[in-house]
Image 1 (cartoon, helix red, strand yellow):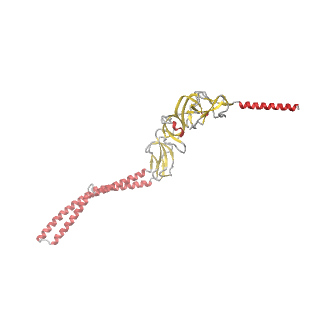
Image 2 (cartoon, one colour):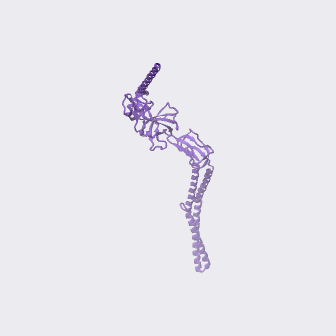
Image 3 (cartoon, rainbow, N blue to C red):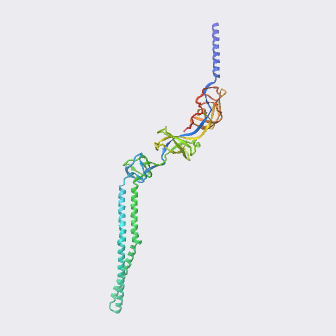
Amino acid sequence: MMERRTLWIAGGAMALAGLAAAAWLMARPAPVRVVTVQRAPIVQAVVVSGRVEASARLDVGAELTATVREVLVREGDAVRAGQTLIRLADDEALAALRQAEATLQEARLRRREQADVTAPVSEQTLAQAEANLRNAEREAERARALVARGFYPTQRADEAERALAQARGAAQAARVQAQANRAGEVAAALAAARERQAEAAVALAQARLARLRLTSPAAGVVLARHVEPGGLAQPGRALLTLAVDGPLRIEAAVDEKHVRQLAPGMRARAAADADPAQPFDAVLEWIAPAADAQRGTVAVRLALPDPPPWLRPEMAVSVEIVGARREDALVVPAVAVRDPDGPAPWVLALRDGRAVRVPVTLGLRGVGHVELASGVEAGAALIPQTEKAAAGDRVRALPAAGARGPDIPQGVLSR
């Protein structure tokens, strides 16, 4: 009996000790790492990805459907304005041009014939007809007189009158013919019109032939070649793509939630993936007036005042657009702020051994760091989101994680 009683007592003591230990553990504050609110400079910026673009891109295409006979340039070739880039099959166009030129030559010869031959001959014919008319008039008058005196029969007077009528008709016809062939009159105008018509036909044939020889509209560089000899050129299809000579620029897209922080004229630093160790300056010069509804982005354009000589169109670049700067701000790591993009951001502060929820107002946002415009003061200990603690928990601070001095990195909004 004594042994059993002793065992009961020992067991009870152990249970009490266990309960006491559990109570002590439950009352003990949970260890958490904290970050400290510090005063430091911060720069707000926006980082975007984009591509280098030429000042203008042009697609070279054909206006007619034809077979490609020759492509005279390749990607990377520098071209000058007016340089022939592509030749299309032009056999029919050349034949039509030769035919039009022959027609023009004939029209010019006919005009010369009208001016040098037909017009003078018609004047001579008129002079002869008028002389014949005068003779016929005298003969008719003489015949009438002789008939009246009885020397000629009446038949002779009738014949003279018929001859006079014929002479008058011939003179009138010659007069009309000569008038028509004089400068500025019908025949000359008709010959001139035929010559102009032939000249227009030649110009049309030349224009058609020219449309089969594709030339560069401006000086630039060939970016892409989309066709090879033997291929078919059709209206609306790009055969070559050119980058027009001019200043390079950067085209990028910014998340629409960051657009309110941008303004034309902001300075930026860009780095190309081809050589990220050599950043170069850029200036924000244009912000699109509308957003892309599908992507939720807004297009921006940046000018490059002094791009490096190795920079090429279509290169990928990363751009940091520098915005506001504050030299003396209350700064904490971004991980310490809860719901930073919501309507009511807050932090979990360590106060009197407990985790306390504190609403805050955010200011500038930097590289991994955020300015707290209100809600806490310098030196306050905040529990980052990486720690397992909730508002009201008893906690104790371990050495701060992620706290930095005045040299806290300046940072950039998410892309």
